[in-house]
Length: 297
Ligand code: ADP
Ligand code: MG
Image 1: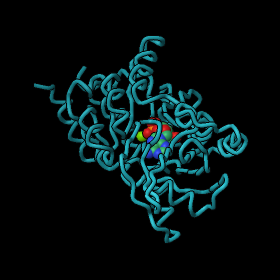
Image 2 (image 1 turned 120 degrees about the horizontal axis):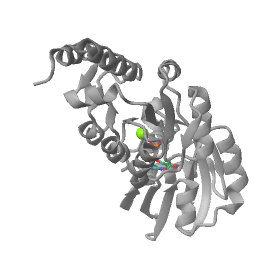
Image 3 (image 1 turned 180 degrees about the vertical axis):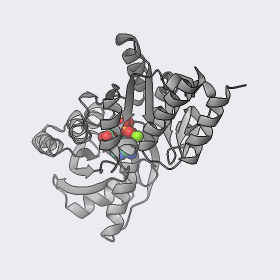
């Protein structure tokens, strides 16, 4: 059984909404020297909104209808934002078939037209569209402009033609800056790890006070990035995340920390759960683990 000070520490943490699932995690946490944060839903609130729309050959409403149709079966926060934007404008969301979601990239679907023919729709990152063989060069300048503003840019293509861009933004959590400042002043290194474009990632990193950024990391590569950080720096790492795509990275980290409102898969993969979804819970957990250990000596 765990030493009494650990049991007390876990109780104290629980009172503050921090669920410590194992005594080992608690003991590993006090030795952590790097904390890696996922971006969307972890450092940010995870409720993006569509801020800007750019079209190519169709009108804004049609663009939004196509995008919302393709996204209507996706649970991704970006998908929800796009569907909400269509609802806000009272648009009819078209029915789709053969929906397919590619984690960390986007979605594909078939749209049945009123005259009976089916069109392929693609909605996702510019890299995703390019990989589908879609020529997006004619919108490159718009993509760069929107990314420089720190936006997440989602492209929409019908068949092989890009028909527009949606620029989305997601707010930094109000306690992100404080959490990061205090971890840094304890001598902890902070890293941002995300599948989003590097300009949007750097924008959020600057706001949060993070210098080290890994962007455009596919879900399958997040765990490998954590492993590289562990090896290259010979450091013990805590990873904080919320999504399905973070689960392998949470398991690879010395300590996995999941946001309480995260997906079940992330919560199951984690050693520590921040039940109240406050980032300051990372500080609470860290400080209590150090404190409990000192009492044990
Ligand atoms: P994060 O690491 O920030 O949680 P994800 O790995 O879920 O992000 O997604 C990375 C990128 O892939 C997004 O920024 C977006 O460009 C694209 N993407 C993923 N899912 C979707 C979707 N359903 N619709 C549009 N784009 C998507
Ligand atoms: Mg996330």
